[in-house]
Length: 164
Image (cartoon, rainbow, N blue to C red; front, side, top):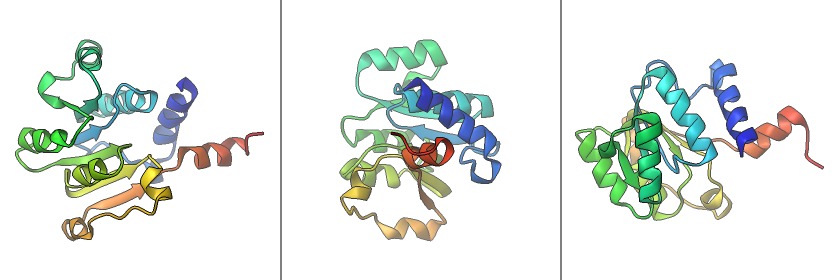
């Protein structure tokens, strides 16, 4: 997982034409924030000065983010159900966030999509809904929102060649 985290950091920092977190990204929601990808995204968001919102699966991970990254408790939500959406919208005064790094699926994906701010971007790194032919609510595009999928395995294979 460390290799994946390093690769993601390198990809974000070395691909300006594809960079999803930029210096004008004011806020970001990172799902599964204590995983390798999430931790890498937190470091990039901190470097850019973005307001970080995160989801995690248990109280130990909440403490980890607070102690190691200084993320306020009020910005850390549960990834176990859709309560994070209501809590995040309350914290952002119903504006949502500029960028979401999403790995959740099903109804949690739909709850996440509703948290993207006007002119914001949701970056999908999970595959469950993609492979299962999932659908998203199109009316959110009316507020100039973007939905982007990033297949890390495909990117790594393109860079390193297929794994054998």
